[in-house]
Length: 157
Image (cartoon, rainbow, N blue to C red):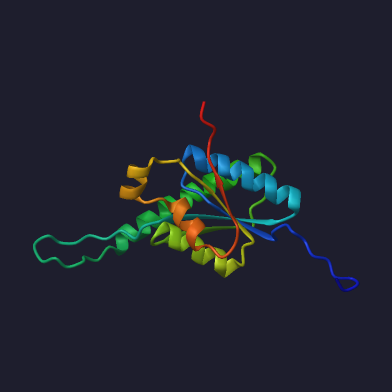
């Protein structure tokens, strides 16, 4: 290593993906703690699918701009609440992001855009059949992310 160059194993930016579930709240506490202890910047994202309405009579996609704005507003409210919860435990949030689209894809794309060194996401731990039918955002993020992903689950009693 060259003189004067330091290399850290810790990420400089952490991206927390939240959906307001119990597991996401645990992931938020974990991400805030890691960011605080490593001096990393904490970003938060909440991603939701784009609302689409297909008219059954014409099979055409209808204009959903009003619905999209409603979804964005709801997502922003969720993020604002999460930011306040992180501040209440002594954490700091650099930026909150709303993503509209496929949640896993939005999370991975944002991680790339902000050059996150770590993604933190909660997982409900769905069983195999439910995961196959519904899909798993955390599984997809793990498969497609270009940085480490920490999946947080609550302990089973």
